[in-house]
Length: 69
Image (cartoon, rainbow, N blue to C red):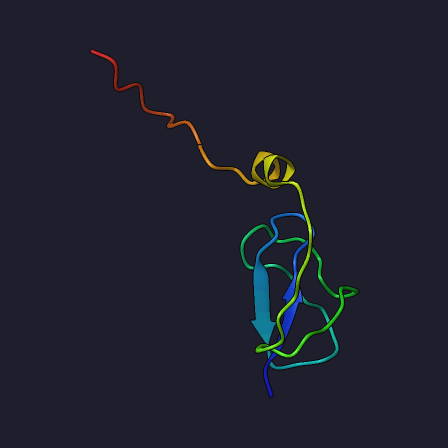
């Protein structure tokens, strides 16, 4: 059976086949081991502030290469 956990840092779902053990978010590497376990098809209504969510997610990563001419 597959399971789902929701990350409190990047607000993404993570899927796995184990109920126990270490569980890390594949997006931001947050430890989800103690997070609530859901069935994958279970709808989770979770209110959150979009501004806060997007401020935690790294949307833009500047390049080390200077492309200015």
